[in-house]
Length: 251
Image 1: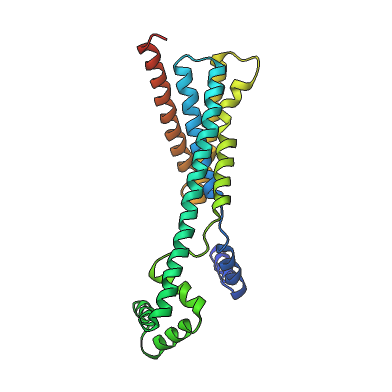
Image 2: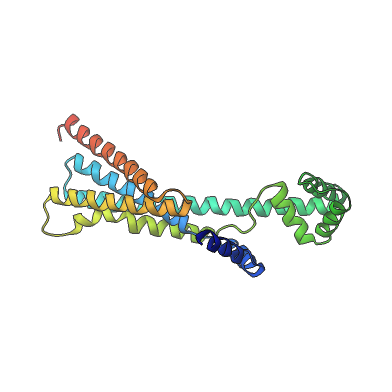
C-alpha cells in the first residue's frame, strides 16, 4: 500500500504542470545556504573570542567589547567576501556572453559547428542533430544561452550579490550574538556567564549544524554533531591559547 501510494505521488509530481512549476522554482535562488554558513561562522568566531578572553582572565566588559568588535568586523568581512564572490560570477557570465556574441557575429559557421559537436557528444546524429542545430541557432538568445551553459558550464540565473551578502551578514550577527548574551545579563558571576555562554553556543552549534544538514541534504543529526564538535574544538583552542598567554606573560 505504501509502495503504491509512493508511485502515485511520483506520478503526480511528474505531470506536465508539476514539472513546469518545479523548473520555475529552481530558477529562483535560495539564500538559506548563505544564512546557514554565516550563522556557523558567526557562532564559531564569536565564541572563540569569548573563550580566549575568558582564558586570558579578562573582565566581562572586555569580553563584550572584543566580542562585539569581532561580531561586526568579521560579519561585515564575510558578507563583503560573499558579495564580491557572487558578483564576480555574474561578471564572468556577462563577459563570456560578450565573447560568444562577438564570435557568433564574426564566425557564425564555427559557432554552429560548436553547437553540432556539443549535441553530437550527447548522442544526437543525422537529421535529428541538424534540426537541433537549426532550431538553436535560429534564436540568437537561445544560441548564446546554450553556449554559456553547455560549452562553459555557467549558471545563467545566479543569486543576487546584495541578497547573498545580506543573508550572510544578518545570520552572522543574529546567531553570533548568542555567546555574548550571558555577559549582558545582570546578577551572574563571571563563571556563571561563561557556563551559560557555553550552553547557548553549544545549542546554537547543534541547531545550525542540523539546519546545514537539511540544506545540504546530509544527515541532520550527524551534521549537527559535527558542527558542535568543530565549534567546540575552536573554542577550546582559543581558551587554551588565552590561558597560556596569561601564564606566559604573568597577567
